[in-house]
Image (cartoon, rainbow, N blue to C red; front, side, top):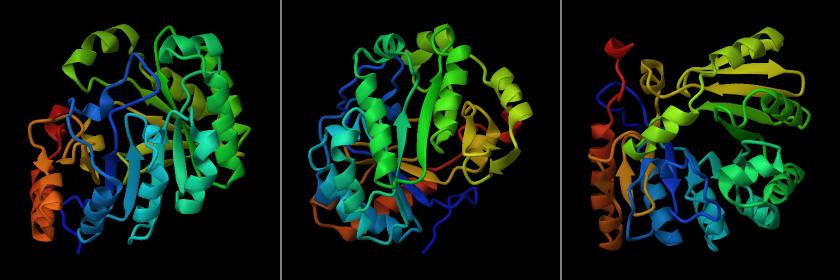
Length: 309
């Protein structure tokens, strides 16, 4: 069955953080808006939760972290999910370990990947992430393309004074030349502790988008994905991900999140309305899992409303 929230929005996708660990140390990381947790779900527990989620109309799953590739059982997790009534299984990754694991992940049922790539300059990459591993990331991107994952999306967070200007041109050329989708993401204020980073590095995407608009062959809008605009070029796409503090983002949201500790999270921007779904899993209560989903969906509400435009 499909269950809509109190604002008429269906919940069709589940974004699952499977760990808070990461092998990079990006200075802007907001940890999926999650607070530190002291428990972590097993592969079997994740599969049981997703299985119940399909009863509520969820047919897309995105696996995130931290960094999901640091979990040795990621292939097992992907394999278990892909056996369910799920039409799209994807991961968001920094790509460092992707080259060595992507073939097994694709065989297990992984459909596509979002890969973080904020720069093509090795020194800048190390400045952002704390690690000199850009070469491994680029190898991971090529490996993902080689095994046929599609589409491959490259996530670039715009950081004022770090990767703006000519760097964006280089990333556009790199992405379009490979037939991938480049997602340009505007820095967001997700947690209070990110406020200083936002003030120092935020840069509006508006002037960059205007230049892209003039050069694109066509433009499309993903209304069911927070009204994102896609600029189409021969050989690839560039997608603009504006800040979430607008009513359009919330109006078309179809996503429910789950923390690595097994809490359903109705909204990225809040931690005061989480619903414990792992406890009923460990108690063997399918009805308890269903009740957790019902509660979480009923707690979904637009963080930004029309009145705030």
